Image 1 (cartoon, helix red, strand yellow):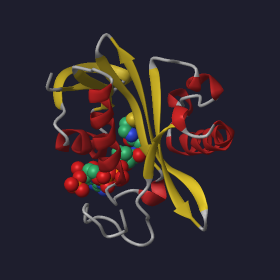
Image 2 (image 1 turned 180 degrees about the horizontal axis):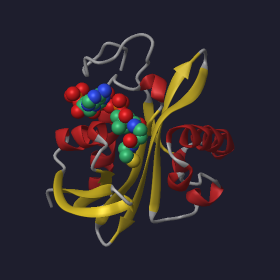
Image 3 (image 1 turned 180 degrees about the vertical axis):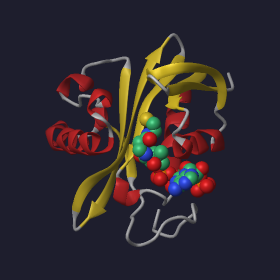
Length: 172
Ligand SMILES: CC(C)(COP(=O)(O)OP(=O)(O)OC[C@H]1O[C@@H](n2cnc3c(N)ncnc32)[C@H](O)[C@@H]1OP(=O)(O)O)[C@@H](O)C(=O)NCCC(=O)NCCS
């Protein structure tokens, strides 16, 4: 989709990414993409929340990594990703991330829509996630796509940082 397309958020400084399942990308590209994801992950999340993107994620059959690649200067760059875990016909949306420079242009929305779309192919009946109560941006994004708060657990992340469990039931 060209910039300035259906989402209405996009501009020429932020090309719309194409989303791929990491496992389906050509195998030789995986190390570079994993390296970029590790680098982004280290910049965005606190050290105790960092997910270790290494080649083992390609072998974990219950885990899927969706990566959004944008073409910049002829090179595909990671601008967003999501990590999901499948269990018992449910999908745990473990984490989503959009590169700081690309935020506010609808990419997080496209990523959540992609996760919802893919969850149907994986025969999931519900998508669950945990989000920091204070993360109003992520909460706004999840609410926009139909996630509702099912539970609150005090001190879930650390003392004083409560966690919300948000759930979306999918049509069977
Ligand atoms: C949460 C995150 C993925 C959103 O990505 P994004 O590309 O900026 O999201 P979008 O531009 O699609 O915005 C989607 C919605 O998020 C909310 N949102 C985005 N930016 C916002 C802001 N600055 N203030 C308030 N709400 C905001 C809004 O509800 C917005 O919907 P709207 O545009 O219809 O109002 C991104 O901020 C991020 O990676 N944050 C750090 C990692 C993180 O917190 N991940 C979630 C927990 S693991």
